[in-house]
Length: 307
Image (cartoon, rainbow, N blue to C red):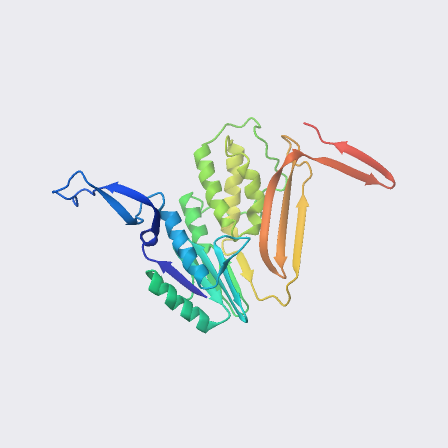
């Protein structure tokens, strides 16, 4: 696996439209002060710059036999004969891996001739996610980012909590406690959403607390701090990936069936594994009111949960 970093990515895109700009201060032509400049390449601050860079990079990648993944437009796949390679793009941060070292070496040499970039070798940290190799697999962790979050919100010295949410707690929109700073609440929820990339155990708790971002009360902030205390207790947790012995998919799903006391909607959750490797997970509040069907012996009892 190789990590590549592009130097000044937005300056390497070619424009398809005619774009003009005023002369830069201090670099203007004194003989023609009212003239404008016509851009041949994109520059930082130009709205077309991100698209021009992506189009140029995509055209180069596809010209070398890569195809865009149908499930993720930032992932490019090369599959010809026995050679398989994967190329992941996030703006100017690139990951390349495959089963043929010579093919990877040749491709890196080609892309280095086309774009100015740095080969950073084996990746150790990609977009804040630490990649820790072991004898049995690869551990994806956000240990460093977790510490920064705890320090940022003054929770580094807090007492650890055993669970992300209290099992007996019932979160409502208003229970009489005073409101709190919604901006502070949103900031914490925002960073926790990113931590969820490697922490499947936080999905339901984050989903529940995200439903009150528009008008949080002190009780919501109390539970949010409990979640940060649980994060401190499990700061070294992450996702461990290892080579599967087979390609069997296992899916687990559940719902609380009308668990929201405000509008009687349900919260659904699922977790999908490739053997023992978690690949996809989600916790989401349903949009419709739950309708529960109970079966007792041969009698069916319809029960509609109302407000």
